[in-house]
Length: 490
Image (cartoon, rainbow, N blue to C red; front, side, top):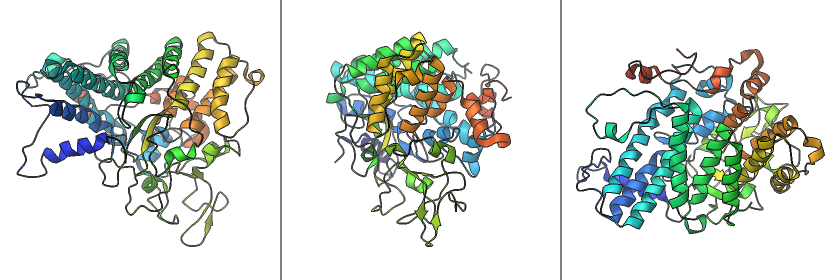
């Protein structure tokens, strides 16, 4: 049984907030701080509400494994995923505009959750609950706020972050500008550094909850984004120094039907359940309708160029299904793709979960793993000095050995350019269809537009400014001249 599944707590909050006329609705943005929170149970409820938008849910979870989730839409801008139609095709061709609600929705739905978390922290700070309970609760909310803020910043650039005084006076209309880049980074960094100090060690943290390791992992993502190589190295060393994490021997099993609750590789995963409290819809999204056992909608494919970039023995390629016999008895593959494999193989990665009785699966949504720490440190070591080192090569080889592929030699990657080309490819092979971070990796290395043009040729509408997504026209209009749209989207 999954330990303290935080999403079950969140479901309980949802049930309390309006499923019956006999229950009073609770809006955590409109409660009276004079009488809430008063107990540890109240604090736990507030903490659960911070996790709630971070779960996988088609309607209102930013980590949904559908087109309403980050992984799907971010990887679809790269060679990892390709969309044959719809919003996913817009992502593939980089044809999104300020009218593309499928991509502007992430800001529109979730930016106000940051303000909700700010109010929650203030309420907890002012409560009379035990200080140790308050400290842990605030640390979890700051980690949640730092993670969500980073994800939106990575997509759109600096965003609006309302100060507490503004949030406490919601009836006063006050259009706010986006933060500067420096202030945005400082806001995220401050939250995550505080969380890294006050959260529990990973050995003391229940599966599905944030730990010190998670806060430091998101700091690594932030520092990579900003190319602060020494800070990446420092956070990686702090995680390694916990002497807790390690690579699982069985890469494929991490995405099995048995939750990896005891895995030392998992830094943070979102537990899924068949009831739909957290929805993992990936089989439904990726598998075509004629797939044996149980099909899906076939909304997304990978690319043959991505498939061909793996070594043939690489176990990480097993989830890319390049051939199958359909329910019609026909064998589909690259030579006979029909509409099911015309762009590339099926990007399943997770277990087929053949025994599932619904469209959903209980395979958990893995977000961050220790392998990321090792490859991030390797990249930081080399880019900090501009010179590849044996230490960096050794870190990459730890990951490659687990993948059952050949080890690399420093002599073959002894320039900054060759090393960065290798590490970028290695990251794509290791993390495909996890949290969508490969888009950010491409941008960091100046390859985002280049890869899109290589993949789609004349059909691609990619340009350098497409590295940031647009905001909706509604948000710009509400800003009354203070909220400035990203360049070239007006």
